[in-house]
Image (cartoon, rainbow, N blue to C red; front, side, top):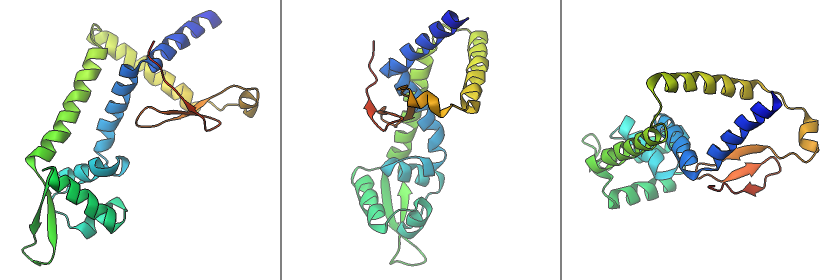
Length: 185
């Protein structure tokens, strides 16, 4: 069965080398992670927070996102200039501004979700509902196998490179910390 498993792994490698497949996978992960604003980056993190909890002060944003007040101020200013958020004086304390997401900000989040859905639908086009369900079951089993695998340290000492990190922008880092390129073949 070694030839068969190697053929399957070669197919996985072909998928991982496709920038469209990797982009779709990361966008889908990002879509799910946006529901948890702590796992997103920069301005999108702030925008997703406001989509979940609108009308926050800079101090509340600082605390919830665990970032510096100056970073919050810069991000709010940039988002406001681009029309994604607005500031309004608090009715309780006119010295305090409340930050609200605008329709443009909500549309931006929705547009990103729609693009993610469109890309994943395109990639899975041609598969029947039963094939998609079967693929889900099989990939879940494979993912569980990978998570439960304990690699022997000798595996890494014999020059085998293991990809240990793929960043949100698709940069792959190996077990030695080197950047690897994903190419589309």
